[in-house]
Length: 278
Ligand SMILES: [Zn+2]
Image (cartoon, rainbow, N blue to C red):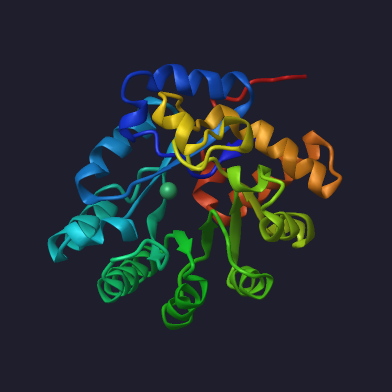
């Protein structure tokens, strides 16, 4: 059983064929998927998509969306978490975090939304799904101030010291398409060397295509697409298996157990989509 701990099935890229995308994922053994929201306007759609496709979901405001969010959106988050507190498919607050890579963003505003949502997660007793881009130290600072119930640092791209600080706070680290690029030395070294309990798998679909889906800017300009999707997860898992020297079965079992440890409500969900590959 594979778990895609991070896929944006609500993205416009999947509007036309979401059902087929989910079926392809089930067919290759992706038993569970977690759909993180990025803005308040999407909360209900993400929730209904999760219910329609036997998936789990998280609610939060993504750092790249805080420029168009306001205090009322934080209230909408609180209200939605309250309204759906007994929904077993609601497994985390996310996607929240800090992006110090994309130029021109209001970092102070990101920080305000990040801290506010950490408090909301703490009060709701839910783990968080964190967006980390050149921001691991600032994220860790927030976690030292506001004690949340762990979660996942998604698409992790920090140093080993930072990785170990997230682990010490009960976080799993999300590995996806980036690990499939041979030149991604740092990420591959982390995937190979961190304690096995650190590792969870994700696609971040439709983003972060693995190496075999990657298209250059010139190829994309000529019409080539590089949409990532949850069905790529086992092949990404196979790359991790190779880096660790594990069997595919062990890789699936270990990363699924880690995902369940990071997102306990996910462990309690039935897995109706699981396909027995014998
Ligand atoms: Zn994401």
